[in-house]
Length: 295
Image (tube, rainbow, N blue to C red; front, side):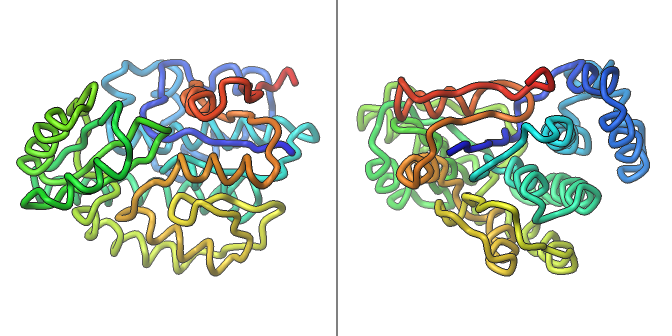
């Protein structure tokens, strides 16, 4: 069974999507439509922008979404997923790929998501940190004991968990986790505490947009970050997507469940190969590849 997975924020690079634009009429049409929807020439920034320009909030998330969803569209008849999943932002890409959302609605949600998250980041000084080399239960236990807001946010793979919260609480947790034996406890260069209670203003803002958007019955199940299980019911998918901004990304659990449910091959659709690397952390022999229109 083929599992198609879609990356999240951080995978952007200058020139992303240019080969699709140049070689596919379908891609060109979708990129031009995207410029109209977001209200600026995001295509030009993706193809020619500096790394700094690509890091702008209004650019980064839509750019990764566009690269992923347009690549999936260009795969044509070769795109035959038995299951899909996306890491954080990538979940919306996955929902377009499996026909739960149409392309235009997905892009509008991603743009609103990016701006809402940026606004939430400005309310409280907050950050995230990668914790390497400890069991999840130890990280969770330490976070619970720290004063202030700090929670487990991204279960990326065995031995790699990202925590998220207010700056003083995250710094204290890093200190205690280092003492507990973490190989690394590294503050990440991010704008705020994603997938934590501090994203509640963004969740509330995005919830209205999600609830006003049509969610269709998908062509295959999506393994959502909140559920870490196969979901096919449009109402449940919609509910889980609302919850995603303040809930942890259960990627380790999702990978294990996809494999348990029969996934025999993973194809990453979009920029980078981070998700393939995470699957290899679960099973070094697991077949992984990157999608390309040459397929």
